[in-house]
Image (tube, rainbow, N blue to C red; front, side, top):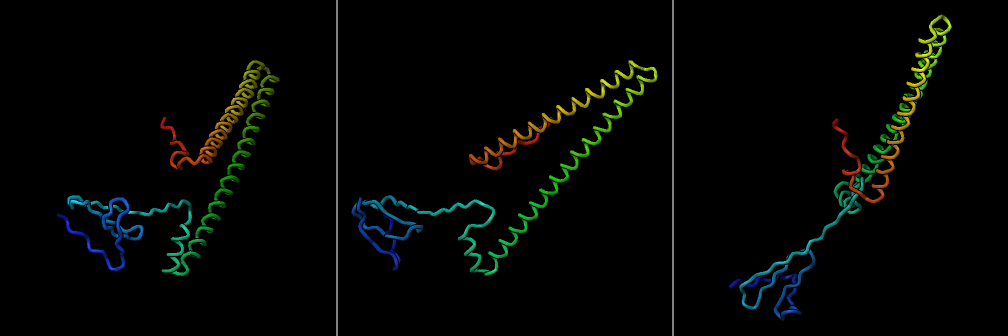
Length: 185
């Protein structure tokens, strides 16, 4: 036969509404014990409390606890968060600017190559090589058109992928599933 647990002085004993047996009343979060009438089985139930917080900063409760230990901790955490956010925005501006400069540079180089090809084809045609001039002009125009179209298709594909990621973020999909792994071809 199992012994009855001794109730702690701060705990109260009451009759169970379902069985009529004595039961220890404890605050939520502490284990409770009950025994059947024959004393053969001991049952234990444990009430647990769980808190979930998402976000880049600690929850307000954690910030309060940190402030009790180290009063300057919340200010330090917020200052570091602001500094990191500013750094990230600065890096994004650098990436956008360098992308724009690279795009402009590519357009200028493509224009120079295209013009050189057309001028070269005109020069060849005028100086007795009309077939070579025609082939050169056609090759330049077709290659520039192909580069333009493939570049636009890549931009369109990237825009579609980003739109899909934004939609999945709005639905609340996990971050790990938002960006697909790179192709290993």
